[in-house]
Amino acid sequence: MTTDQAQAVRNFTVSTDIFYQPDLDIYAQMIYIVLSSSTSESSMPTLSGIAAKGRMTPKQAVKAMQTLVNLKLVPHKLFRQMIGEFQDDRLSWAAKGLLTYCRKQPTITIAELLELSDQSGEDEQSIRRALVELRDAGYLEEYPEISKLAN
Image (cartoon, rainbow, N blue to C red; front, side, top):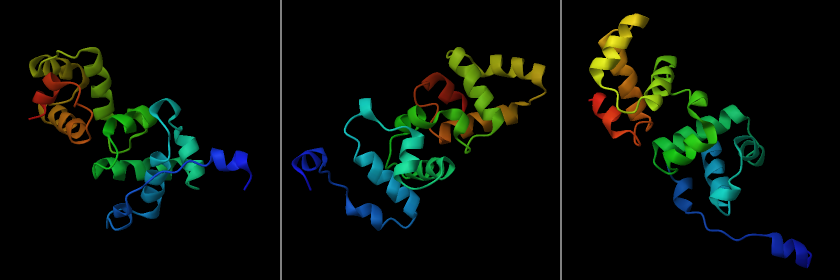
């Protein structure tokens, strides 16, 4: 190894606990290692970059990141920054649409949502299901008022 190569090598520590987690497959482990080797948020790799480094498809990378988020090994905020809500297949289209609307109306009440639901043919139960789906997937963390509607 040349001096230039040695300087380019970055040492990092990854907890070996990830290798003993029963819910982690090889893709999730590799994503964790790739993310852990990133130097900072400003140089955070893209989804396609992570997939390439982990020798997987972007779809496999998304699934692996979802697993890491569900196990709270990767912050949901990082997941949202890298993936975005429309590539998160844990969410139904109803939840994605509701999230988009709620982000534009962060102080909306359940009564207002129900009033709007009459225009779409959705009932209160389907709106509440979508809100619970969003809350459970971590999308309402930054919207405490909307999160209250999911209870």
